[in-house]
Length: 531
Ligand code: TNX
View 1 (cartoon, rainbow, N blue to C red):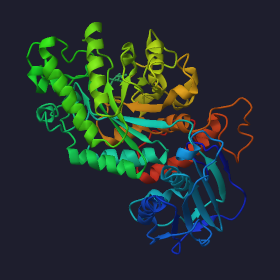
View 2 (view 1 turned 90 degrees about the vertical axis):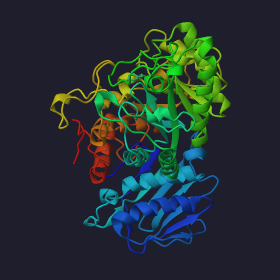
View 3 (view 1 turned 180 degrees about the horizontal axis):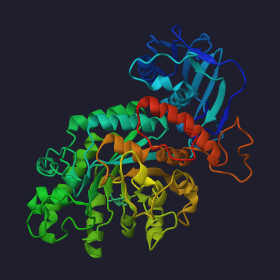
View 4 (view 1 turned 30 degrees about the vertical axis):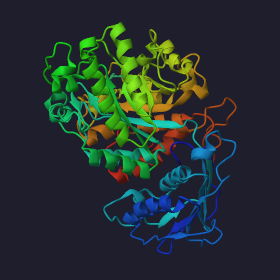
């Protein structure tokens, strides 16, 4: 079974002899940065194959043997007709004379390696020294040309409602990288817990990290933990976007520091699932301490974060008056921008007309915007920024599956508020440019699938909610826009072009074999020919 998720711009599988990865295979790296990408892939492939897979310096692939895999970085290698080809585009050629992965950049070369990963037998994912696949480590003859549609392709993990240990986060990063996602947004703080060590305000974790939703215990990342996550992500060309949710969703911080509260009284820690009851204080008496808190916290988070973005929340501040909200958002976003990062906020922040240059809005209303969600979102573009789309009724992976009661993991997982359950096909069946009127393709920085964890407390539960629906979101973020004249299922050897559910299901079944080998406890939703 052959197929790549997300669908490439073009993929041809000619009826020719396959490539065989074997004990002779070398990874031949050419161009600056190629060897590092080759080493990451070699380290992965050695575990399951047991082969030596040396990484050697090459000169463009001409010197490679038929058993070799060439990793080439050179100008002009990516498809030149794709807008983002230079940043992350690549080509992949495989056959009995070898494999050649080529891109303009290390990021593009890494994306190529994840297509190769999917074209290899699923056993390549195994970490338990499995027997090799019966026919050997074959890669079908293939010719792939590919580049992403959107620059920002994210997965958001809410580690505040329930804490997830570093190892779980690393596993998650590896799996989203397989889908060519390139952003991990960590929702690090909320009413129920504060999950990142801040040296200048130690009780944020001293007190604020001790709880979670449902009394399931706390946890937090030390700075070294966070650095490990950032580093592991960077090896996979995934950027970490930290979120400190302000001015609402702050009960954990307010409970740790009485002086952040208008009345000077720390509230009790919170372990429920309500939203919209906590707020930083906007009064002049608290201005000094609140601004110091903002500068210290956002400064330390920015210092730890090599990526360009800093998410400051801004959602559901229902306990903050409109005037206080505007005042606090001005101060929060100014403190964020003072760190040198580009500020990101949920779409409510578009109420402010004083956003720092380039501020990115994250839209979380439905595919058909309600109330003032659309103008709040276009406000970011009017102020020189761009938008990330996370429509809750299709892209929130904590929404229940429709037939959840029969799920092997019970009936307690997931929520229903975003217009009921979300099917795989709903997660797949939307077009980014048709959500918010007035948003052009170029206004859309990208797409993100959040998973909120009020009801999700373990890694298997998380996997069950996230997979396979995140593959649908990844395809919307990466693959070409559907075009009316693109052929569909009668063109079986060429992927991409139209959004063809049947073709998606078939490729998903192939991906499923990899997820099985990885031990991911994904939901085997109906309609997909899982093997
Ligand atoms: C809304 S949408 C939230 C989160 C909840 C989530 C549950 C948004 C930006 N905030 O606080 O966890 O719904 O689905």
